[in-house]
Image 1 (cartoon, rainbow, N blue to C red):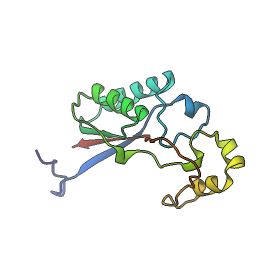
Image 2 (image 1 turned 120 degrees about the horizontal axis):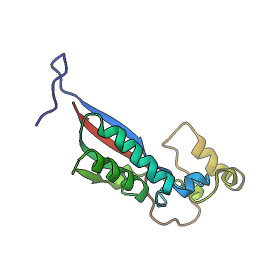
Image 3 (image 1 turned 135 degrees about the vertical axis):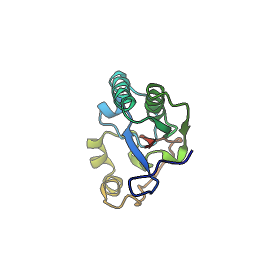
Length: 149
């Protein structure tokens, strides 16, 4: 089925971007990057609230999400509330790799890893954040919901 035509006869799709619910790391101001903490209770409630809101709007055709637990759980909650069976978890949607900043509190990162924090704070999102030691595989925070009108 093709997307509906606009009033000008053009086809279009609406994309809704939703941030994942809160994790204990968010609450503690710890830099997550691609680390994989789960949603905390507040985050689970946030996911339910946004899912309820979206369920009252146009039904999404699909829900796309990072494969990280926090994003995937948010995506699944939205998909369930919106009666969407097409949930796509994709590593390509993971959050930016935070290099040496992974697992540090923001205040500590400024003090302990100033060069890495400077790269993180740059307006240039393509600037690589230094990595001076090994980090395990990491994961994202965005949930993308596509809606056909």
